[in-house]
Image (cartoon, rainbow, N blue to C red):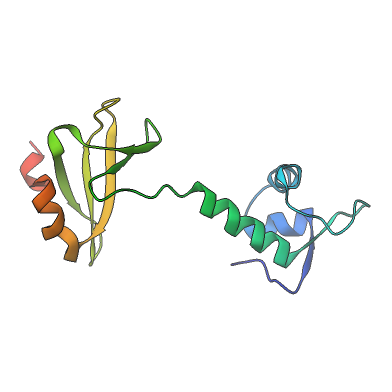
Length: 134
């Protein structure tokens, strides 16, 4: 993490270290990021920033069940239409599974390791990216 736990930051320094705007840091303070004192300049402990961000990122995670994909349209875990998915190779060890959401029709996705492809092939009708392109 770019923020060092042992240092203190004012709003502008914290924004620069995190690549955010000062307005974002101020909104985090309103949202619950603890400050060291209410006087100007507003100082924030590096450890407080790290703890706040870890909690914020953890709360944003949405765990998926064994046969669910994430739908960005609905914002939740959904089954793909007809349990069909397309396999898109990503990196050396991962693939992206894409399907259509049963609720809204948007693209729903799930990133898995290539080693789990056989496990998902038992649950879903998988096709390769090359097979689905015109």
